[in-house]
Amino acid sequence: MPQDAGKITFEGAQGQALDARLDLPAGPVRAYALFAHCFTCGKNVLAAGRIARALAERGVGVLRFDFTGLGSSEGDFGNTSFSSNIEDLLAAARFLRDTGRAPAILVGHSLGGAAVLRAALDVPEARMVATIGAPADPAHVERLIQGGVDEIRRAGKATVSVGGRPFTIGASFLEDLRRHRPRDTIGWLRAALMVFHAPLDQVVGIDNAREIYEAARHPKSFLSLDGADHLLTDQDDAVYVADVLAAWVSRYIGEPAGEVAPPPEGVVRVSRAGRGKFEQEVLVGRHRLIADEPVDAGGDDRGPAPYDLLSAALGACTSMTLGLYADQKGWPLRHVSVDVSHDKIHAEDCADCETREGKVDRFVRRITMEGPLDEAQRARLMEIADRCPVHRTLRSEIRIETSEGS
Image (cartoon, rainbow, N blue to C red; front, side, top):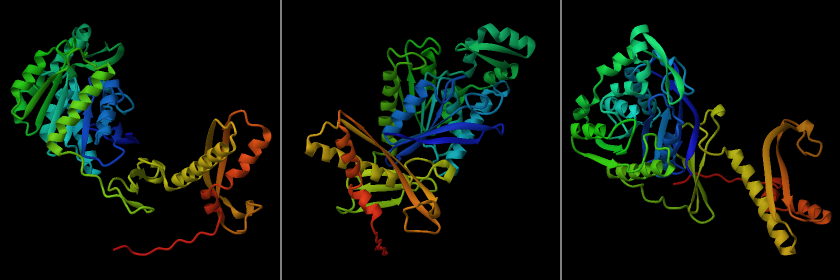
């Protein structure tokens, strides 16, 4: 399953903190993509979330963020413009670059598509650009706010309704839109282009896709999203776009690297994943896990922390042991869940601990058993819990031998 790197912020074009989310694959990352959402939408709009998660499932890490003044990002939307959106995109690309994740793919939905077409000229790592329902002319946005254009021109700004929500838009925003004509610069792109558009798009007509496609140089591709609407509200449409995108980018970044040779039987291999401050790749036979630290500890929270894994080992062993014992006895244990937490307590607060100074590790285990068990059976299973192998290991003397590998 894809992972969420947790809350991320970076400085936008106007100096405010922009709120972002990074969707990551569970395994190795093949490439990173930067996603620009539609006009007045946000990073969590359905299409953005579905496409990002689907791409992550296929090995592409995706950063999506709220433009200045939208969603959870700081700033006043009324003071933004199409130019500032482009600058926000470039700030996001710098953030990825500075953290070792320079974006090879730029994806833009609706007005975000027009923005990535322009921003791509200033992102040297961008080898692929994809637009979804993008206008060839940003001034097309005026159609969405027809009822307020006259007032904006007369008063300098006005509050208009877009998608059922109020937004304050200034005259400078409209003037800036008219200054930008991506179709005039698309021919300068040095990246492969994929144009997605629905023939029956009622917000941005299909002719926009034709203009973008004709203005671009090869390599370029066009895919008709037959039956889809502008916002890709049907999950199947969003996943279809992600599937095609993943197949298309494979042409330029290659398929995932071959499977890493598993460690010898009985050996767990842990190595630095190369992303973030603490992230580790854990190989157990053919199984691959990610370990990390939470954000408040300096990590990126891409996987469980080491003590979480240790707690999980105790919980898993306990649940397995109880299930096996109940099966052997023919007892009606239908389900077991084990909650385990870990902390450190002062030795002086532990009445039955041999250690008398400093701190000792404490695991708190709560076992829930479902099924028509009698009291004697429940009591016996609680005793058996202390006999699970991991429990015994944690309670026994442990020896760790360390040597340098070749």
